Image (cartoon, rainbow, N blue to C red; front, side, top):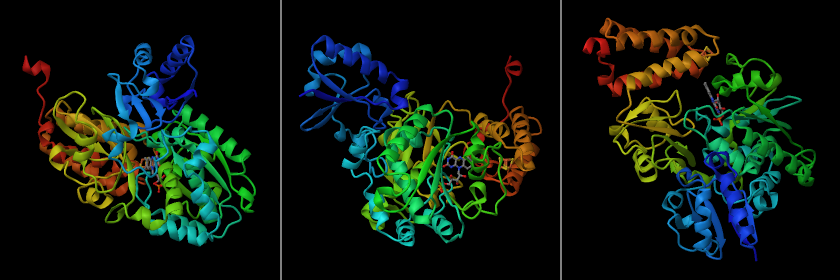
Length: 518
Ligand SMILES: Cc1cc2nc3c(=O)[nH]c(=O)nc-3n(C[C@H](O)[C@H](O)[C@H](O)COP(=O)(O)O)c2cc1C
Ligand code: SF4
């Protein structure tokens, strides 16, 4: 029987040479007269081992990585097709501590299956959640999602079941389901990894949302910087349609749901849900005032479910295994798991799905292995560019929505960016204001003008000009932006700025310019 290999076709793996490795392995096998089956799977999320080559053996898959084309001949010589020992070998993939110590629910299939094979998806539990949903009344599906405690994974942590109930209860001739796959937060990639590695999971979750709320049309808004995810999602939608899992009369149920991909407009603000709706309707992505909330007046003025990729992809497990199973993971009001994304100056970057309650220290050190530079860690920024900077003394914090809020921080979309002791926190604070100035949609004054003034004030503090007064101006400005901005872009930019000032005041001391020092 031909040996079966798995080499990710995921864009992260391909960016470090997975295509070249796959080609080199195919060529070497041909030269040696060996027949092989190479499956281009999604990534397992251990980016430090990519390109990760896995060989199927009776005991399970054996992992080798990171593999380069130059390693290929040696791997064949070492008998890697039978799982033979080699310096790049890691034994059974599932036993690698980084993977073994996770609690993978949403990402259980990612990196395991052939992403576009419906048979593979179904053989690994796919569509069991939708099949269950099709036997239930819409209100019972909503009740199950509510009981699971699932909260939105896009950033704000709003209870998903409550949102769905609002759409279900709204009376309208047309309702929509929109997936927010704009994924603009720094250091995040979970949406992309899921879409490229297990696209039917998102389709299944969105279809369940349609069944639960009476929505018959859905759109996936994917950022333009994700061409591979766009391609994979489009192919998966076409194949689900051809197999009766999308379209009219899903699996003979008499229920219908259509899905289409839309490409994002390339601005961070287009991830804000109302700006996304504007963009989906063909206009520039500017924020709409709320109310009305999108659940009542969303896409084209119709009731609309808007959720993040990870929120939708968590739903099939909840339906299949029950709300209690999901809610048994986590802590307090933060139930279930969150796919954390370890990035920045970190030794073992990648995706770590854990139940809420895991500490920052466990993520940074046990999974991440500390900094890539080998220098001491100094800070993490958690929750994207609008999230707080936290010092090492707070690495004991456990990840849950409430604990982070009590510490003027946020979990957000689960992105964690690590910095070593060479980071300049005043520069980071300045960057937050500058980012807001560049990305602001311009609709409200506190954000549009405040962010530009913020950069200037921080520059004056750095230059030692009227320091105390300018520190007060900065605090005032941040308060105005927090209280007066129309959306969380301007409203949360003060979070990284003030956290940098609070936890790293020494970096806001006047700087000696080079000229002055000479
Ligand atoms: C500036 C800004 C950018 C945002 N970007 C995203 C994004 O890329 N993806 C996302 O899912 N949510 C993003 N959000 C949050 C959305 O507005 C919205 O809360 C979310 O899509 C709702 O889905 P959820 O309840 O499943 O989290 C952003 C919010 C703001 C203010
Ligand atoms: S806070 Fe900024 S991004 Fe949000 S509406 Fe106001 S100007 Fe636009």
